[in-house]
Amino acid sequence: MQGNNDKNAKKTSSNHVSLKFKSLDTNVALARLVVSALASEEELTLFDLEEIKVAVSEAVSNAIIHGYQNDPNCWVDLIIELENGNLTVHIIDKGVGIKDIALAMQPHFSGSEDADGRMGLGFSFMQSFMDKVDVISTVGQGTTIILSRNLRAQHLNINEDLFKGELFDELSEISGGLK
Amino acid sequence: MLLQFEHTKYGLLAIVSGELDLRVVDELKHALIREMDCYKGKNLILDLANVNFIDSSGLAVILGRYRQLALVGGNLKIVGVNEQVYRILHLSGLTRFITVERAQHAKVLRRKYDAGKQR
Image (cartoon, rainbow over the protein chains, first blue to last red):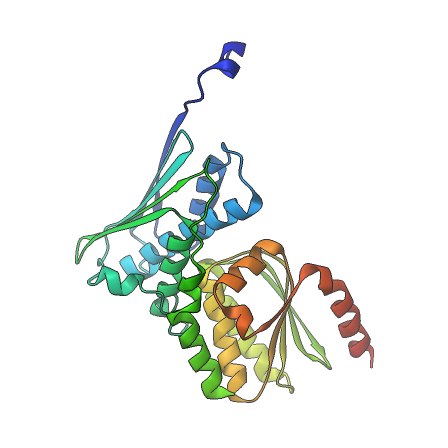
């Protein structure tokens, strides 16, 4: 316990957590729980927390499925920074990398259940639920996804168009073609 | 993840508990396919009342079953979802194709299924 003075201390705060974990599917839950625990230092609604958890889940799933091609013997780095309400999460793999980042980030969803089937939707969720998503990738060297969100501002980034556009068309095609 | 099945006259009821992410999707997918093979009807009802998290991996499994059932003229319905999970289903566009009943309706539906089962 700190002294009472801390209560009236200036409202700046800074917390960093760094975590390294094996590329196991069980660690997807671990990663999102750690991030949501840290984010809970700020006052957030259940919806805010859910959005952050989904975004982290998507990024870590991408690292395991795409980056490491489901090889469970690799390492994923998770670096979380919370500075005055600004949350930044780095998800780093040293896997195969992404050849065409813009293409991978397009909100397509093939409807197939393999890794590529969910990837477009994964990036859509990340972009919709965070203020900013940066992807740095080199083929053969790995991928870093940087998720940022200001937890003290109302999140207005939910882009419904993302879900009404190509994704909607593809889903329409699936259902329309079969009905 | 926990998974229970009940054969009702409204369809195969799959009661899923836990978090639907990468960890469980293969198991969930194969269990659903296996049980649908045993079940004589074409309809699947997913009870997600005890699911507190879903991401694109979980959505892919649901969409996969939707496609599979559509091929044989079957129907997929999702019941009992909490508000957070509903929001994810809605934002993904899934609610445009699949009937999703939120938690407050679940008890009524459950009574219906139970009544159907007793016959």
